Amino acid sequence: MKVNGKIIVVTGAGSGIGRALTLLLVNSGARVAAVDLHAEAIEQTAELAGANKDKISAHTVNVSDHAAVDALPDQVISAHGAVDGVVNNAGIIQPFVRLNDLQYDAIERVINVNLYGVIYMTKAFLPHLFNRPTAHVVNVSSMGGFFPVPGQTVYGASKAAVKLLTEGLYAECLNTNVRVTVVFPGAIATNITQNSGIAMPAAGGEAQKSFPMTPADDAAKIIVNGMERDKFQVYIGRDAKMMNYFYRFSPARATRFMYNQMKGLLPS
Image (cartoon, rainbow, N blue to C red; front, side, top):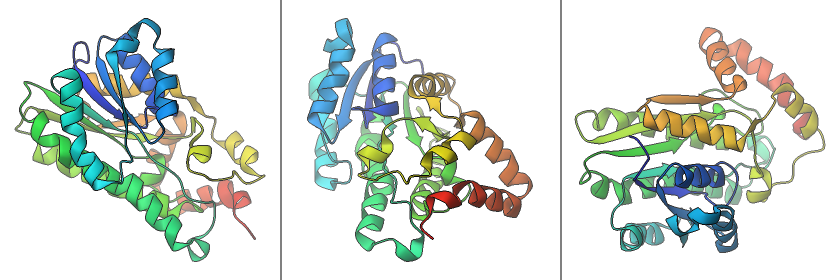
């Protein structure tokens, strides 16, 4: 789906990939319903759009709040007249601890935002998307959604669920006007740890050297390109592409390799 002239909902629009996507989309001729938990962050994104600020509507919504998400389509349509696409980008990580040490409130928070948030948003907007000439759903999974990352086991489980949810939706929409894409970012230069309320362990810098980060602006360009080409899967970063091949070739070796890269982040 070409984005020029389209109305697209972007979650997590207040920072990181979501902010970069919002700015790229409005610069490419789209209008954006910018969704984020933090009103000030959305306003900052809109200010960065400059002359295109009027193409952005702000919606302060917690995507894990079912009732709030159900009310969102009417708000977007009231602001823009229609909706042509949804990019489910909002997500959080878990504390860098083993599953045995992860508290249940952290588990529930990650699952609620990363999985239920995507389900709620997709379910809320699909009926409206089916009424458009052409429409698109983009769900952001993760490199950790197709192979295990120690210390992010529940996060990875939530993103693996997003992967299969999206691929199942792709199959269900094959004979419709709605196109579906799943995105697998590797390490991206964003403030996801801060937004997740997580402190990066002291060894985090060493782990980042093993996986150079892709700038958020580059990630946004790759996502929009995949959207416009109606791609089934989109991989962002050399790390995501490399680990995809490595894990397919030898899952056990890839898992041990990732453990060696991440073990410095885990408490002894």
